[in-house]
Image (cartoon, rainbow, N blue to C red; front, side, top):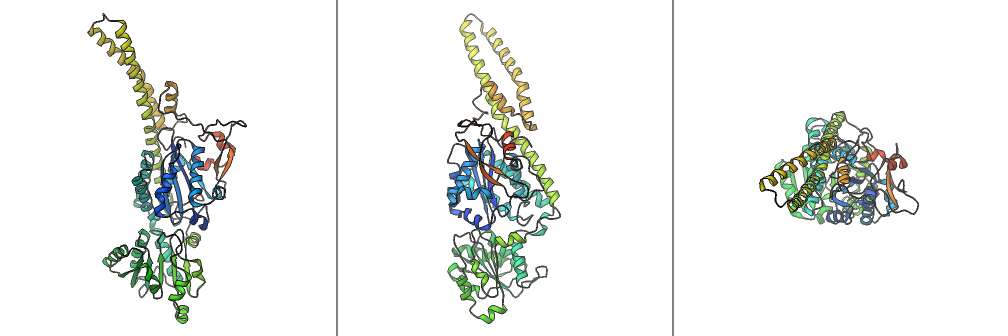
Amino acid sequence: MDGSAATGTAAVLLVGLSFRSAPVPMLEKVSVADTELPKLQLALLDNQVISESLVLSTCNRMEFYTVANAFHSGLDHVVDTIADFSGLPAEDLEPHLYVHYSDAAAEHMLNVASGLDSMVVGEQQIIGQLRGAYQEASQIGTVGRTLHDLTQRALRTGKRVHTETNIDTVGASMVSFSLDKAMGLLGVDPADDQPLVGRRALIIGAGAMASLASTHLGRMGIDHITVANRTLSRAENLVSHAREAGVDSTAVPLDLMSEVIGSADIVVSATGAVGHVVTAEHVKAARQDEAQAATRPLALVDLSMPTDIDHATAELPGVHLLNIEQLTTMAGEGVEDEDPARRIVADELAEFLEQQRAQAVVPTVKALRQKAVDLLAEELLVLEQRTPDMSDTDRQQVERSMRKLVDKLLHTPTVQAKKLSAAGATVSYPDALAALFQLPTGAVESVTEASSTRVPTSRAGMQGSAVRVPKPGTPTGSSAEPDQPTTADITTVGDISTSMQYKNQNDRGSNS
């Protein structure tokens, strides 16, 4: 697909990794605490190539959306920033990264917002997570016009998909999916009416995922919910909502969590903390009665990234642990209403790209007309100096004629530039005009000083990796090279075309 999901020659560059491309331990190392996200997003802007940034961080994905005016150097900077914040060498990260550029990056965000790239296809929680990521980036000032337009289009697309299709009938979110699996471990059929009657639950955390867990447990007929959180007031707020829904609930500070585990059948942890919140010692101390521990199973559900619950808890008698890594293998690969959802995404993407292309030519057209006005003013001044005896009436008539001539001369090319740009033709008409008329806007120099770069590859049946290769057409020892991806780039590295051109809708092996 031709065109650019951006304004001018700057385009959206996405670098990410998810449960599809990276093992959970790698995701844990790359994920950052909520308090560090503003620093990360600002660090992405700390160069001359990236002008906007937005980081989408969930329990099973880390995606870095940026707007770059140069592909190769932009990719280098994003990967280096990820490496700096995660403490991992770039060489260790690259095999697990996927890269989408321009139209493919826009398409990816629309798929993500629609739940088509989620571990549980069709889940709705991702819409709220994307909205939250956008609001966070807006507050710190890293989102501009391009990412604003793209994110709003993605949120609109996600809403349409969930409103107009039945894609989310498989499950409202990862939370409900994981709790249904947990009920199975307890010998309870989630399809039964009120399957959790007589059961008790402990929820650790008081954020969005904790709220979803509380709601789902309430629907399943849970007898009692205890919410433990570092900030007690937030736990009390979640409890008040649960009580309004008719669920008996209490709030406790986090340091009293251990006392509640012993009486719980299900423990859900979703704190986003760094380090384990629930250890094997906590669970063992709460289940000292061996007879009770053997006859009363305990399901631990860890929805955090990095993990909240120590893996060693699963070795205790009667204890079952579900975390992101295990849930990844359980999630289904498709749903009945996926095709209609993908058609909506395709329609929204086409409309978005057409609008972006039309907007891209506007600054160039304005600059062209302004240059014409400036030149006309100069010529009129010269005429006035050379014809001091010309009457005011004649001078006004000459000025009117010259202005009409300029308007007529510019009308057809400017209209055609808008029309051809919106149609997504291969040639960049804004840049062509800018180059022909030597305009100050529209043409961005795309030359970098590096002689090598990371280029993503995405081979059939394999996860994409980012590798360093010399840029095509670069003479040995030369530092001048084109920095936007070209046909030569795609030919040289083979399957990079899957991430830079229109991606096959049926290829779901790239990320979530």
